[in-house]
Image (tube, rainbow, N blue to C red; front, top):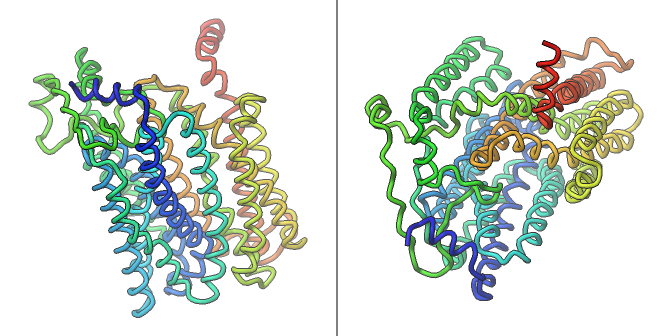
Length: 540
C-alpha cells in the first residue's frame, strides 16, 4: 500500500477507543506544555522594557520580544515541513530539550552572571523555537488521531488554553518582575519532565516528504531580523543588508521554482503530497500511521524536469517554502496587506499600558497586570465566539466592526491617558475585543484567495507574516517609548510620558485605520473578483 493510500485509509477508518484514550493523554501533556510556553512569552512581552533597563540596553529592549517573535513565525511554518519526514516523538523530544536548554541558560546566564541583552534574546529564541512544537503536535494529534466528535472539543480547548495562558502570563510577568524577572525563564523548564510520558503516548510513524527549505528560511529570516534590528539601532547598513537579503530571496525562489513552469510540475507535487489541501492543524504533519507500529511505504518520487535538475545546485531543496505563484496572485497580495496592517500593533498594547502605568501613575508592573488581565479575558470570550459571530454577520461586517473596536480602543486610551487607569483598562478591553473578533474573518479572507492546493502553505504564510509585522511594530513602538520621541508635543493636552504614549496610541490607531481603508478598497477584488474584473473592463 502506498503512503497516500494508507493515509486515506487512516482518515476514513474508525478510530478505536484505545487510540482515543492514548491520544487524549498525549494532548493533555502537550496542552500544558503549550500553555507554559505561551505564558512565558506573554510575561516577557509585558516586562521587556524593565528587562532592557536591567541589562543596560533600554533602547534595544523591544528586541527581547521582536526577534523571538520572528523565530516563532518561522518555526510555525517550519514544523509543518518537518512533519513530512520526522516522527512526532523525535520532533517533540527535540523541542522540549531545546526549551530546557534555553530556560536553564537564560536563568543561569542572567541570574548568576552579569545580565546581558543578547543572553536574554538567545535564551528566548531557544525557548520560542522549542515550545512551539507542543502547539503544532497538539493540532496534529487532534486532526489525525481523534474521532470527529472529539475534534471540535479539543480545538476549543486549545483556543481556551492559549487565552488562559496569555492572561496568566500577564500575572506571572507582573509578579516575577517584582521579585526577579530571571525566574520567568524557568516557567517552561518543567516540561522536560513530560518527555518520558510523551515518548510513550505519541505516535512514532511518519510518511516520507520533500524536506525542509532550510536555505530559504535562513535567507528570509535573516532579512526580517535585519529590518527589526534597523528599527532598534537605526543603523542604515542594517537596512541595506536587509534589502540585499530580500533581493537574494527573490532571486532564490525564482531560480528554485523553475520546475513550476513545467506541465508536469503540478503532477509531481501532487504525487509527493506537497499540494494536499490542509487545514491549520493538518499542515503540521502528513502522518500515515495510527498509534500502532505499522509504517507506510514512501511514495515513489516523480523525477523532476531534467533542465531544472541541471540548473539547480545540489544543496537546494526541491521547492522553496514559498513560490513565485504566491506573488503572482494579486488577490492574495491585496489580502495579505490586511494582516500586515491590522497585526502591526499585535504585541504593542500591553507594553504601552505598562509604560503608562509606571510612568504616569507610578504603578508597579504587578499592579498593571491586575488591570489589563481583564482585556485578555474579553479577548478570550470574543475570540471563542468569533466563529458564530462571523457566521451571523458575515466577513465584511465582522472585519469592519473589529477594526472600529481596535481604533476606538487606541484613540480612547490616548484621550483618557490622564483620566485614571480604570478608563485605560476599559479602552484596552475594547481594543482586545476587536483583536479577538478580527482573527477568524481576516485569516479566512486571506486563505480564500488561494487555490485549495496552496491552502496549507497559505496557513504557514499567514502565521509568518503575522509574527513578522508584529515584531517590526514592537521594535518601532518600543524605540519610541524608550527615546520619548513623541513627548514634546501632544494632540490630547498630555505632557511627558503621557504625551509620548498617547501619541504612540494615536499612531497605532492610524495604522489600523489605514488597514480598514485598504480593506474597503480591495474587498470587491478579494471577495468578488469576477465582478471587479467586469467593472474594470466596463470603465476601460
